[in-house]
Length: 332
Ligand SMILES: NC(=O)c1ccc[n+]([C@@H]2O[C@H](COP(=O)([O-])OP(=O)(O)OC[C@H]3O[C@@H](n4cnc5c(N)ncnc54)[C@H](O)[C@@H]3O)[C@@H](O)[C@H]2O)c1
Image (cartoon, rainbow, N blue to C red; front, top):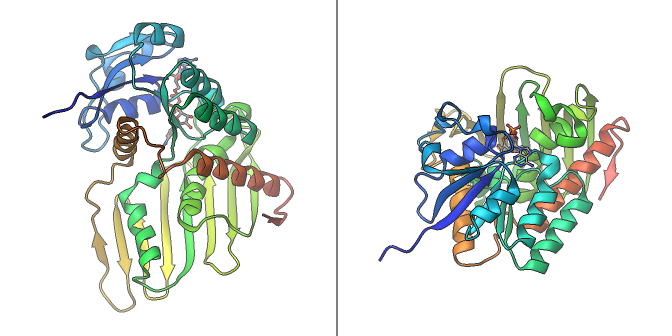
């Protein structure tokens, strides 16, 4: 017998709100019923007819639209969760408000721009008993997880070096203000550092070198997470490079495994390259499906626990400190 689907609403219907909306069409456990954005010009078919992979399209005409949080919760009191895609400086305020108003929350990254706000979010989640998950999407990427599995099962021997990069052009609007976005370090670099922490745990020390470019924060940087008995880890991120490029390479004793778009390439010396194709590499679809399942069975989302996503923010703030003091080594 089919069970009733959960009901969700998206709060903040800009670029990422549209991306999330497109992921709901094929979800088994949850249905998108409403949208909220202070700018009603965002509620158009032109804006939502974006197609992300084969995840489906959002049909704004089938959704109820609101222009303030207050109107949203008054009009949709029986939502199972609110999917927050607001500018980063609003994540803490609206996650806490939503949880106090009785809703579970899926919130985009970064969790918050400082650890004090992360702590407030964690406390509110426990005090209210509402579930909170930060959408650290790489944890739900099948291609990245394939590499993580090779690390865990030792298929290609010990991991010697892990190198990640994520670079593009300068985003517009509020992103260019470090107090609202945290700069490229909190916007792009967060993805790679969060995945490294998910896979390898906390480093023994770190250092970063970077440049303040447009936001007043670190917008172009290279960082090393140092593991005493682990692999060499470096991650480079920037908003100052123009065209989009991102990926990772894991150099194991017996093979190098790297991402190539949604594929995973395995290179073993003197053998032809092997291309592995993950079954479903739509990490945005996967993270929503996972959170909906957690809400359905009222279980805290372990894959992206709030404690672990707070730890990512702490590491990024230490990297900022290092980058702003010319690459000072910081011990953890
Ligand atoms: N996981 C990823 O890959 C990824 C990619 C891009 C962005 N993001 C994150 O998603 C978040 C949103 O980024 P974006 O690119 O969509 O930004 P955006 O500026 O395109 O969208 C934000 C939307 O929020 C609306 N808004 C602002 N204040 C509001 C309020 N009080 N109530 C209701 N609506 C309000 C704005 O009108 C805008 O439409 C950011 O935190 C960003 O870090 C994540």
